[in-house]
Length: 220
Length: 220
Image (cartoon, rainbow over all chains, first blue to last red):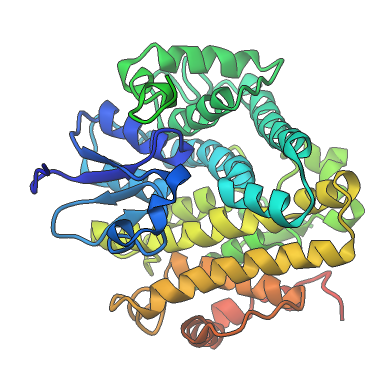
């Protein structure tokens, strides 16, 4: 049964990009109807979802009466503009740039390398096996998080969160990477600033509730 | 000789992310001092640049008296907020989301897979050679541009440009991919809508002037 007035979030339990939207919605106190699209069963290619988003990409966010939105960063910026409070970006332009840059380091420099279509190519067409795929995953999680650790730990703008004392889009994107690393049982050592910030975030209901392992469809 | 009052753009001739900033600055009529960091000589790891940006990443954009900015999307959003005219994002929130999603498809789904550090890993540690690296490049350029073609060609919001009748961040990011594909001599077939939009963009001085082959350091 669907509620025609509510926005819909097409989602799957373990995707990093969907996690980001779940956290932002929760921080802003926005309700949505979440609809599962089972990537492991290929439901993104079935007519029901193709009619909504021919790209087959998650998350897809739909406000009633409007075209479906894709791409987690575009959706996050939309939610911030449409529902400015509580703010997930600072007001100062230079601080906004810092927050967006941290977010991009996670979502553009790190995450795209470990997504399913890359795995499919490397295993199916480039001779990778489970072990070399795992080495590849570890390499990019480690490189991304280690670079961010160096940056955060040396910058006085870093606070309880990636930027100051309230959660921002930077924290959402950081935790979207560490949460998925946990799903894959990948641990990155010697990132104490990140470990501290992630623990601070995950003590908040909005982050804890978005944990992939707590979503419908996750392994018990 | 440096002009202390002018913003500085640390750049290299062929990087896709630097191209985006060059176009945005030109469209907005903003002057900067461009400083070459020769990635092929490893200048990003030398003390002179490490003192400015320890990540060694390009582009790095510096406004006098402020911390260096990194990540092309964060810099583009900053330039748009700081210098709103001419606008590179529509005013309507849903249209902004569409433009940002197209940009992200290029910068997050496509570009990160073909950057030098990925090449270095695949060739140095995963047994790729020039031929399998080229197949990899072709795969992701083709997949990214073909998916975008399907989306743009079927959407009435597409105009002379990716969105409507003026250039936006979406066009900047699209052309940043096609310009680099050209540097690599990679042609993607059957993308007439994209070919038309890119030609429209490149007829504008701001795009033409940012062409990698026209930058200092490019091969003659």
